[in-house]
Length: 206
Image (tube, rainbow, N blue to C red; front, side, top):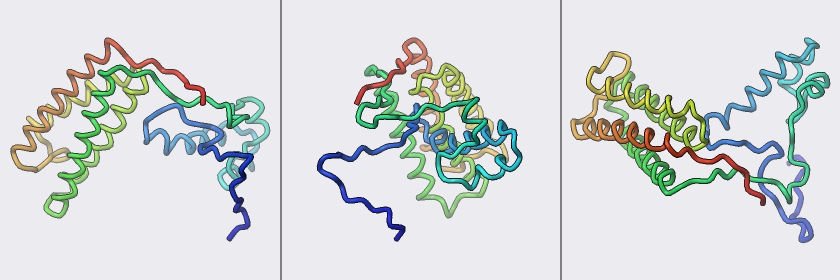
């Protein structure tokens, strides 16, 4: 349609990715970090026209003064780049599997009961799922603040189960409430355990 299609060449194998690869597993940060970068460039730009124009320019365009004062490294040779690859122990892998399984259970329970749930409960499930994803992926990135985020999330989750409020409630059957209590408790314990041996952030050559 746009005349941009290129047949794959035998002498130039395809490399999938971006020229400014992310350094995180957190899907929320991944999806919004480029908007954050645009907002920072708009704030830093001295020319008012550039502040407005950068939102409509092609991908990668930056005001000249901003690019000079705040350079951003990009991959120059796609065949010798380094991929984001923290070193994980068996504990870290167990933690990731545990959180992944629980997230899928949360989503399953939400979708199978969606029509019968109140709006507040639907929003509460959304908050539970999004904070779980944000918390455990940040922990796997090795951020120290993520430990405190996860422990705080677990404690608040237990408190809301014991003392539900109008704005945070999960009106589901009793067995699921017990499951949530066990989940928050195990999440706190595994987070404390991981605090003793955080993952080592590193890059892996392609």
